[in-house]
Image (cartoon, rainbow, N blue to C red; front, side):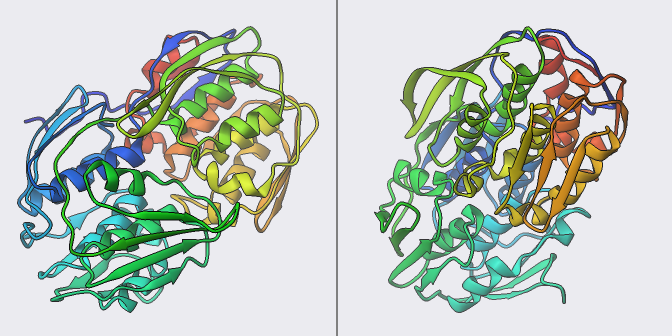
Length: 445
């Protein structure tokens, strides 16, 4: 069984490109891939997964479950078979569980492990070790979990054994799919009904996947923004087959590339268009992009469609803060789109970006300025005045989305864009360089 991903690539520089052409399918959705491994491992029976993202983040999740006694065959070409051990079938790991660079993996795993009758320890790389975890450990502690972080509320997370958890009614202080999911996963083990109320819509892959694996949860729309999810503990997950659609967060790089490189005409196939994830499309359309969604269908409980993007040039706009949670991972590449648009683009209500793999507000401002863009930084966003971009050296701060975003910026820059710290691209998009060059981008690995 291979332990190294043969598609792992880095990138070092990007140069100007002409019109992008072609039909491609980007790798499987990372959020759904993580959850498919988790739910299949806890299910009763054998699950088959197709389209799995074989990036380092998802492989860290799979390795963690293998360390807790779960048998898995693969992955190979996106196919993985997992023999579930049931809700109470995990065994104590003999070593720390290393989540690498993945905040999703660490926060969701914390929800699962907080309910186990054995102790565990979650660790991560240098970047993940600086990310806030109290947002997860606080509600879990109120359920009876026994967790501890470092003095700053960051990893490692020590989790002690408990016999049971108590249900809670939890109001999320901020819109976060990761925190919501951690509480819902713990709630499966609680004695009674847990409710989670979110102040704004966030991705609902956990709720959809619960149903796909036969576990009931109730979703009540309180208002346009507020939703309450209820789940009663004590149920079981039943194995199923999952076909993971392409990740819209990965597709976003090509959506923007085709929108800023003159002469482009690009098609993206089999993309997840879950309505809690399509903020990127709404924002680009507000900027005047020619993006058409075709062939909509449903696969495995998730809506899927193809996209056709043609270059027409972008215009600056004020991005609706309500769209921020629906495009939170796409803001680095949206900042590049703003820098290439005609006019001013205002981003606000996005302070959560400061708590990602890097401080994505500060890092994008730094990088765009290095390429000659006019940018004003604010606590919860930035104001970008579009114009011509020059070349320069970019520090990605080992953030995969920062690195890929500036690789796209290089396609319209007057001189090469050199990107350092880009090895983390493999965490979410291992064949990015190959696909990018296939459609006409000019990236050196």
